[in-house]
Length: 561
Image (cartoon, rainbow, N blue to C red; front, top):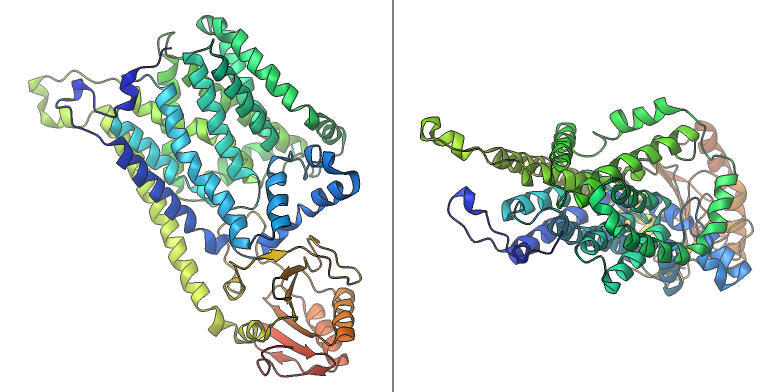
């Protein structure tokens, strides 16, 4: 495969009639803008109690660094995740970044994946077949991919996984153009190592590329260059080996449900979880057509597209195996982001590689106007429109719900107003959604500061530590305010917090809200509050107690300690 200068000119081929100019810069800019807007629309669904729960996952990582020294930063896993993203989040936590910065970093990775994936298409699909409308249609599919957008603001490594997968595919495609270039081999080695430092599922991508070159006769001449790059990447990943072996030798964190659970996850839970189910199956159908067309490409053009096809197969098999063995849960849908870039590229191949029929005057203008290529581009645009409309509808609903937070939860609003410098706010709510529900809405969190910097400090309270995912998750703001977010009613922890602040004469605000508490928990919380001399203020959906040292005061009666 050799680089064709025509790749930089996104124009319709001569066979389509008049050669209309196509502006790649404006097209890319508009697609990036659309991606950014759709990604930003998910913030109301991502800023909630799970934000702190996900941030708390990295407490163990920081603890290992504290106990074992800086080297542990390169060897410690968070669950089954390599330390690539953990290094980034640990840096943000150390600098006192705001919750908005946590989400924005992931959003930046998510948006950056779009131009990278389009560059992969330009490098991997034969230049004479990839025109401007096809590339724009592919960009719309990527920009509006509901599964990618749903996880694009997550405080986790999945947005980075998508971006690193795209970068690795780009460097591989360009190395196929110049396999003897030291620069191209070095970039492939670095991108592969970065991918493996991000997520173990990244292993399926270089494996697919290796098998593709090994099986296809024309690929074997480039096999040595690929092996050199992979060897360098393996050396860069040596610090990950001990942790990986420990995970493989340990017990599964989920029950082994067998292949049936994997099949259910892939065919029932995944397609319609986010966005339109019809659009999901349409994209899968396009990918199937693109895979078929890729198999028919001549030897000089098929290497890169077939590596995408094999990547989809290997990644799907790896995820299914992990679910079957209990390494992953059937409901953990972000794993399916690993093969998503290759799947979308194959969908683009369906339009790019579709044959142009020969038009005859007797067949009429409609036959000439509705060619297979244009029909597939139309399907891509329609899928993008349907999914974009669905996401914007979710945003409108979330905005309505959140704008009513102060009126629907007046006691919580009073609590946040009374939460002044040097005081503490304890929110108690069992999440009414799973941590994998990326479209859940918590109406309370718009009342909390999103853009203020915070630190995961030790509050010096018995039973509470920074990054505790269950009891408190204590964080400190710059003006001395503390926030504790509880996922269940824990009277021992509340008592310890109350006694600690009472000894310092500082204000404690406790707000319990939501409908997930049992009657036993509610009664226990009421009795405990009354024993402390507080007068509970209750509404149908929330309860509020306010302490200022030893004296209980009505909600909203004070603006500080």
